Amino acid sequence: MLQDVYKIGGIGTVPVGRVETGIIKPGMVVTFAPSGISTEVKSVEMHHESLPEALPGDNVGFNVKNVSVKELKRGFVASDSKNDPAKEASNFVAQVSLPGSSCAQFMFTPVKCSLLMVSKVGIVPLLPSLRGIPLH
Image (tube, rainbow, N blue to C red):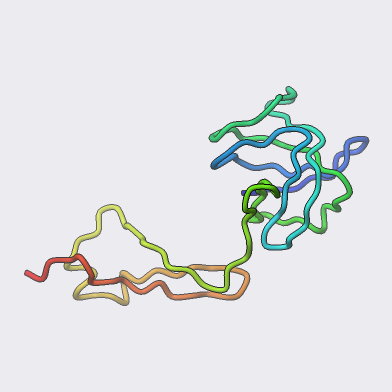
């Protein structure tokens, strides 16, 4: 997921972010979601050193061809174009776990325990589910 995007003189557009799964390496064609823009990765760097590939957990910058800084935004996801690239979703189901919360909070004060997901389409309430919670 992209944390930021920079335009570096003499280099070009450099998205910066953390590798969550898979790898990213020079020569790889990536697709950015949700925009659908595809481009080749020219180089990958971590702490100002070139890498042959970046692995999960690495915070990296990678230089991309023919993409403007204005076309990419924080929160976009870069994925391998040849391996089922990420796409925008109109909806999804999430299981959310709140550390320190109890069943009673969800059962008796759902408004206080409800969560909100903020996205490009607006604020979407994530309602707590009682499935799997024992009723004492």
